[in-house]
Image 1 (tube, rainbow, N blue to C red):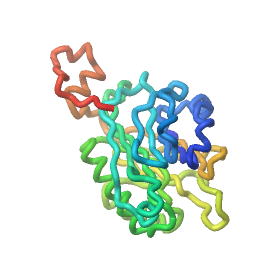
Image 2: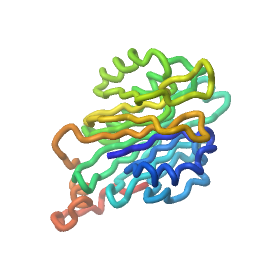
Image 3: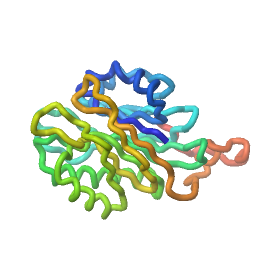
Image 4: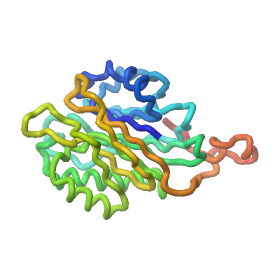
Length: 253
């Protein structure tokens, strides 16, 4: 699968999304710092799963409906930094969607993440990342999971990688740096953490009007397909599961 993550720099790069979708044909698009009030329902052939609603700098996830079926989308509030308390830019720093991959006939979880800014300590961002992974394991226990976004973690990434590995995740950097706005804060800000997936490539795409560059993650499943619920199996194989009742399943987006 192909997943693009892009920090829009307070929505300034929103006009680039259709071109990104057409040029790189992602299956999923994860956004940070978007104006969720003005988000379109469709970006090219991508459909909006959902977005945060209480953020000045919002998060959103788009996906291809000809490839996936969305089971549930949920937003999460993580530990706040001093910047969050004073400037109130973000209440929800994580949004995640549990999807059925109709081609692979299995479920997985994808998430868009935005860590606290550089005014906070790395220890707080590590706390947010750990908490985000814990929330994702509740949303999709045992499922392959991909969390992409703006981690705001340009240095000491070796230590971050060790901490992430201890929780069962892998940390993957892109091929080149993803942030170039300030002279002293250039580097890999936009990252991918994953579990149950093989990340074959993370490519930094050309810079647009944002201070962040988009990243394109290419991933495959690392184990055999496994459907977690009868409802999900019915969605992926309706003809083969006619006797399955899905009345009690949660399909809220």
